[in-house]
Amino acid sequence: MIITKIIPIGNEVFIMSFVNPVEQLTREVKEYRKAEYSVNPLFLNRWSPRAYSDQKISDEDLYSLLEAAHWAPSSFNDQPWRFIVAKTEAHLKTFHEFLNPFNRAWAEKAPVLVLVASSKKRDNGDPNGAHSFDAGTAWGQLAIQATLLGLSTHAIGGFDKEKARRLLNVPDDLDLHAVITIGYRGEKEILDANLQERENPSTRKPLKEVIFEGTVNP
Amino acid sequence: MIITKIIPIGNEVFIMSFVNPVEQLTREVKEYRKAEYSVNPLFLNRWSPRAYSDQKISDEDLYSLLEAAHWAPSSFNDQPWRFIVAKTEAHLKTFHEFLNPFNRAWAEKAPVLVLVASSKKRDNGDPNGAHSFDAGTAWGQLAIQATLLGLSTHAIGGFDKEKARRLLNVPDDLDLHAVITIGYRGEKEILDANLQERENPSTRKPLKEVIFEGTVNP
Image 1 (cartoon, rainbow over the protein chains, first blue to last red):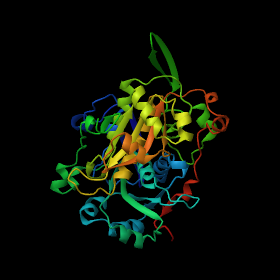
Image 2: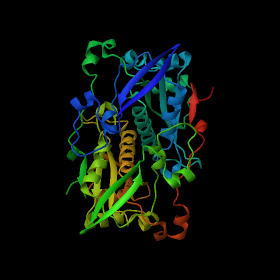
Image 3: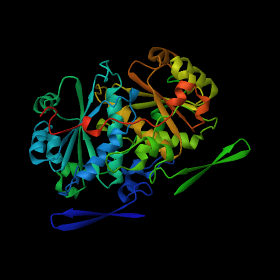
């Protein structure tokens, strides 16, 4: 099934068609990724490109991603995740300042950046040992909802956390995890040559390397 | 759309029908959960029940969940997640020994338990500051694939980590996060009265409490 999405650009409309990500693999994913076991195409279709188009994201779509993220499960349903969103030119400019130069070079094109943070304390004041784990779960759900909408995401760990903390007034009880780039994919030719080569869905280790039956060292 | 799943039980077959989780909300989710923004039903349909039926899980389905988990994104594609699976009677018995009594009482019914761990070191030996975050992402994908298959999951943080480490021979470079119960839902009447009352999809904070635009304290 082909899903068609109509995106307004100024006074014009842009029609984007993509395969239904829960039903079939995209062409490039089919070429680069091979699952060992039957799995919904959704998980294979999600990958982390670096080339973004000029296409803006509607607030409706952005909030759909954040909505999906916050329905993630968490320890005691404490929902420790926090999302600091940059979508205006001024906010994006501030975010660009704390990205490492390598990441900044490509991430500057993304129309939205979201810094994923998490509260180290539970709402009752107790330390929350699961806050990083739970924030990761929320980020995964954000990425999956993006895939469902034909959007791409790429999490960046390479940024100056102390600078981000200072520029965004992040209090000490929030931990900073990743800057998520969000946007529509662009032509890979806009990337530097070395990144063009890497602009493909990544592979995975054999599943047996990450699964243990019963005990770790039998 | 109604999805029908045929599950063999001994020499008989069990026919399970459920709504397509990417297309509509289940009855109980519709009753308990309300999204603020448009979002795929998949994320709302996933919740963490405690009542499991006697229904076993096929290896095909179990590995489908693990396959989904390991296609999660991770820092430098290091895939720090590790899954210690208990599905035999002997392995399940060992896992039950390190669950807190409150959780053990209901989790003993689940036909499969998966302890989610993560490697604190990258494959090149460097420390991996994102290992907990990435393991959380993988767990979220496991839970979403379970929802797609009509299976339920519930992550348990309440277990004795040191005992688990000892009983399962977990090396020091692996961190332990959560024991995931996996199974088909059962009647809530099998639970203690206090848990029966809580056997409903949980709600969420207002989205504005977890989202900041531009800076944390403007």
